[in-house]
Amino acid sequence: MQKKIFVSIFVMISIIWFYYFWKDINYTKHEEIKASQINHPEFIPTARTVKLSGAWYSNIISDFYWLWAIQYIWSNVIWASYKKYLYEMLNLITDLNPYFTYPYEIWELLLPNYNYRYEKLSNKEIEHNTRQAELLWLKWMKNTCDLKKIELIRNEFNLNKLWTEDRYKNPCLDPNIPYYLAYIYYWNLNDSKNASLYYKVTSANENAPVWARSISAVMEWKTWNRETAIVMFLSLASSVWDEKSKLCNDFSKELWDILFNAFKDKKAFDWKFLSMVESYRLDIIKKLWEEDIDAWLGNADNFCSTYLNKAVREMNMAYIEQSDKRFFVDRKKHANDANELLYSWYIDYLPIDFQKGKNGFWIIYYYNNDISNWDFKMWKY
Image 1 (cartoon, rainbow, N blue to C red):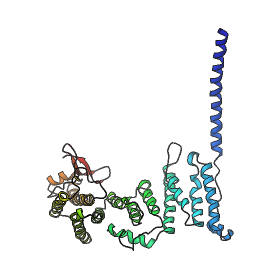
Image 2: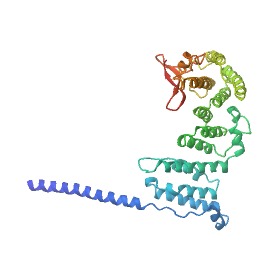
Image 3: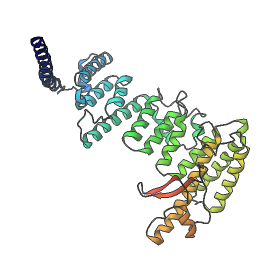
Image 4: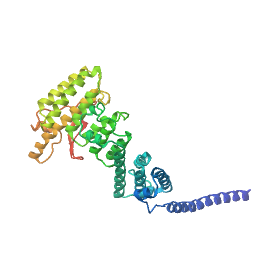
């Protein structure tokens, strides 16, 4: 009996030892295999060379290079080492066939993204990959979009015109083209200005997501370009038309005309104008069918009042910022918040934001030292 127990224990120990021994050997061998799989194409021909030798079969040849690129990605997927030559390969493929969609799209998934768990890239390498992705996407814009329409859209701040006037409509073959470019500008390059432009271009396509319109205005707000954000929000307010929101639409359109001309003449806000606008805004809100819009923060994209409220917020911020400039000249520092500007006699009117929270808290305007600019937060003076 004791002998059987001893043999059983010996067998179990042997099995456990064998498992850990071979696991260690296999792990080492697995690492060697991973390291040996990196097989980079050290020579990639130019598109001109391929076209000269391809006998006018550039599209077919680009398909072969695309298959080669997929194999290259797959064989070097560990540690994302395929990124070393991915741009050169995709650039060649899209030179041979400018309308080949997949190579453009693959960069958006692979080139600008970074996963710290299995990629060991420096910040310089990450930025380099992102800039390469930007170049490919701009190339796709050039090849498949109407650049003249895009320039018209760039200079148009009445967003309502982008989907009502033919001269702006459908600037790209696919709305995803400018949409992905806007995505990389905002999320990877922290460039809200260009993100705003390409969200505008996206919204001009008939089958584009509706919310691209509002995101373009939000991107302008994130650059603290108050005047542009104001007219963009007001144009959205006047475009979300409904018989029950006619008061809001008409007021937004009238306000757009007034402010657009005032901004061209470099006129600043004064407290009387702002208080009058706020009075009209409150009166309109009470008469609209969105009964509790102020109470639940007014974040419904299909409400005229949503955009009117946001435009008024930007007006309030612009008024505070221009007053804070005088405060800074005199005090050599920025005011902590709008309340300090009021009690220091730099403003004659304390703008009240439309958003209100619970327990006496509401949105206040304050100077955010982290971003070196004026911002808003839920607080209480």
